[in-house]
Length: 157
Image (cartoon, rainbow, N blue to C red):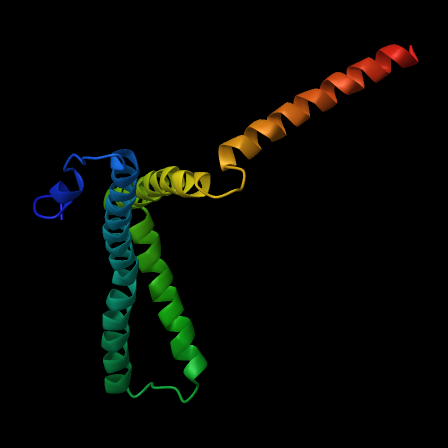
């Protein structure tokens, strides 16, 4: 993606709508990076399942050879859960997992910021208040309430 496709999102745009196009392309680029990181993260989370299934197959073969197979499926389920927990505990302590998780969370934050920037422009064309305007109004209202409470306290005194 980085070598072949991502560079198309980096091409400078021309015209009056240049800024809007750049923000939309940046959001699409961040989305693709997020999807790539999320796929890698999901692949890592799937590894313990495959490994635990291999271990369980080996254990079942051993139990079958010894003639100790149980008719109760809960026994096998509990055995599988213990093996799976062990594999997940090992996975969660690896540097690869921590790095992949950090890349995924950072990619999500980058995408959300790019998405919000692009949506801010789209909403700006509609007859509604933008998120930044609402945030500014909420902050101003909060400060006015604080000032009003101070004035009420002075009047009461």
